[in-house]
Image (tube, rainbow over all chains, first blue to last red; front, side, top):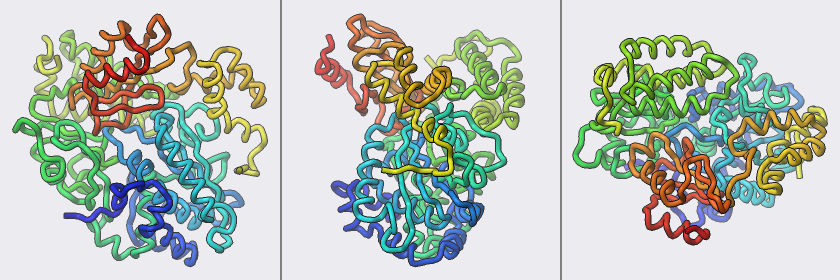
Length: 419
Length: 151
């Protein structure tokens, strides 16, 4: 049984308090980090091979090294805008152990020389906002934030900024616009936030889970960290399991753990003795994995090799009775609803996909509708400002590729499984 | 306690407070009335149109009156697969006598179907204002509504 690293404290009573955090090894990594040079810290995190946990999987140390050294003002943005359907790991981390994330954020800010850390939190996370604010105030009171942190001469302020209901604000440049009090529409990249971020200043943007890993790397060393996971997907990952399983919930396991192990040994398998039909391995914007690939190791490379992606590690399990056209419809509804409207392929294309899928599920589909869907996917993917276009297309195209027979059964006539 | 970004202009720093200011105004006015938008604009030295443009982008700002208790039910994929979410919504529709997007005549409850509450492990789930209720049964829904003064 894997001993949890990131979730080791969450079952302790009052795990969210600074007292419990300090009594269980908290803020010792910060003390060690402040005794190191920022360059050594960046090198250490590079050697650890930690990769971003928010979906894109970008190497964390490399991101740190992109931050200019000489800029007068630099910022850190902590992305707590968790909204990818099927994902609920960041909520757990900030509600149950916020100081772990704060400690990771302070270390990251020190490594890149940021003067202010903005916590951007999903507006609906009422408890999370409270926990963040309390934890930040306590960290100030203990001298872990503010001026001359632990006598190091390093200053850092941290503030919480509440979002107001927009999935797109999880995209880093949209989040920066929202932080500035604007509509949360993405900016064109490049320039990347490490060059031009919050108020045009260099800004390091990280997912909550990514930062939670940082104190453990500092405390135990990069060699220890590389010992967890696979060669190029190092460290632990929090998997969120939902859908057709006995025990929905979060499971922290090394990257590279087979998908089937997570579903059967941890989540208890599929209720009713039913067979598996498909799995979304990393949130709604990752292509489906079918039963024949269910032993795939859950790491960046293995999932890419079978045409899917690790994404946020949100595993949604679907049994043999699931109508995949209905699943595609629900994914389409989400993305059409959340399109920010800035660019046409996503705004109009998403709506067209939704309308087509709705009529197919309603039994009013016309011959050629699957070709129309493919054509819309081609028109959207790669043609949008931000990754939302690709995200929107992934589950649709994947369902067309893998479950063509189910689409055909809907055309014409209705779908029995959906109703 | 903090004044971040000394380099950014005062106007820009004022604008950065907009989302927070809109929450405060919404709390005071119940929803973002024309007067509320106007007052926020004056306080932050912004054009009302700019305030309106931003407010309407975000789903948590209400541009029309809502019930005292806003009930959100997730209809996302995970909740749908787990079962119960649609039945929960149907039950609320029946019990409150309103459709999603509507408010009861007495102004007590509004019903909204939403895409994801990040509660995929504990569905069926609903949120009433700031409070998330999880793993719901109809009996529990009844007692919640009764407690809030429902029928």
